[in-house]
Length: 97
Image (cartoon, rainbow, N blue to C red; front, side):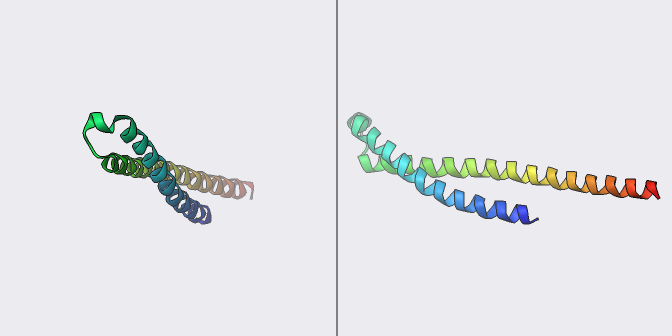
């Protein structure tokens, strides 16, 4: 259980850092797109940059949910394995008596 809590704390910290980094990266990409194709698209540069920033946030959230699901599955499997090992150890001790 302690591994799960530590993993959850790390996941939250990584999530916050990833959101901040992705907002800046995607905003920068949006600004580059707005400079390169803003006149052709007929949209203001700020609107394009904001749209890319929100796309970065959405991408981060989707990736974090997928990562959290993977971590939850791994923790569940590890807990199941630990229970099986405990049961096997108990069975071996009982059969040796």
